[in-house]
Length: 583
Image 1 (cartoon, helix red, strand yellow):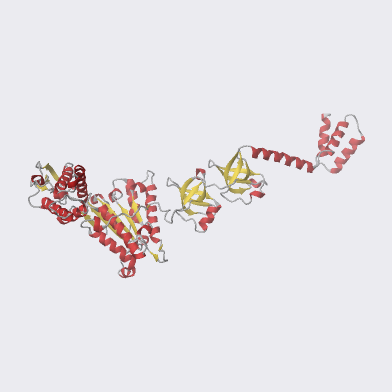
Image 2: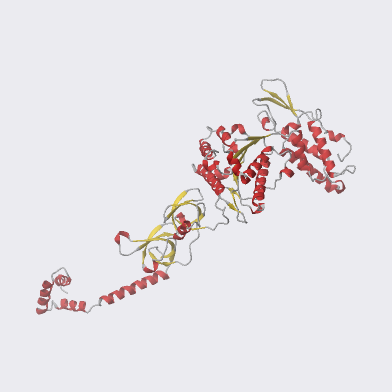
């Protein structure tokens, strides 16, 4: 074809050229046919005999079906649907999806009609290059990282806290939003996040209604009975137990006198003086009181104890420790607000016990470490007993410390509304503790006396040895700064409940070894007990120096030990001069 004739063919097909002009051009072309114009006329006839528009459409559909078949038969990938969107007014819809690597992408929708029922969070299938949304995927996506729901922001987004205690705002599946609106999922619930923490997919089922509490101690109730396990129990045990009982049975009477239900106690004293045992006894008595009032067995009552541990609160990330303290108190107040429904339908306000052991680790005097200062500031703000969120709730705080002098004064004022001091054992408490620890142990036979009589005789003899005026010559000699008068410390000056417990265990071990050799004379003897007590005291004395002696025995306030001398001990104990082996 002559290239000069091509423009004429273009002009004939150009709809912008007026129709009369194109008609005249076509008439002139047909009337003046030449060998050069015949190819042009042939091209016109070929165009007229070309496929109809319907045939062209079918051809395109056939090609598209072939492409879709190729896509479906090729590799595909799974994603999570978020929403349909039209970008820049395009007639073709695109779907915003979260890929399996957490990337957000837009995929072309081939057939929009079947996908109109998709909801946010539904699984979908894309082609291998993640360009085309092919179809809805079977099943549901429920695998990913676990987070904690904080709040619903709107109908599409929620705020969660990840495992690293970071706050995140993520998309939320439509079904998850429905559950939040229906009250089935509440703040604190465990949420499954999609890959790279892009979207919240679903809530994990709760094992119980307390599963959302991070700091709640869900262990068993301690098997510590005051009558059985504690000799000369401190008055704080009875006071706290009575407070809980009166608040559960006669709260109106206490309100008449404007007595607050919130109670705070600080237990301070040397290591081994029985603070932890007292806390465990209070824990047990609280559950016994709840069982008496509600009629529900102890084993069926819900967890109501928070055991504050530094490992749960302290974080290497700046600011996270403060948030953990806030979260702890939020849980305390939330649990205190929850009513308990007994099996018979009665509703009760149950007490909440908060145990802060070794409080000096969390509440050291401010000015030493900026990080701990921030934590303590948050702690003090939430621990205020006059704060409305805490004042009107039945919450009992029990804090323990061995070093009250290093605790921040503000913390002492808050938690130390009542300070209970635990010291070393005197004559009466020594007998009581020893009796509790030895009760039920086998005693070596002695002139036909009963086991109880023998053990009681051992306790009397040990008491006379330790607390008699001349029986114990002393184990260490101290000199205080500014004085030349020596002070003798005797074995009785080092006695604590923990030391007596270790001594009884040592004596029982020695008696057990003797029983293996001669079962007929099996049992504790006075010699076993005296040797064990002596060994335990001398072991403590061996660790003493001028700087730490105040941690092992009582010293006058404000004094400083200038010198320490260990007193040489006799090679034999008094019991070893007595020939009766059963003593």
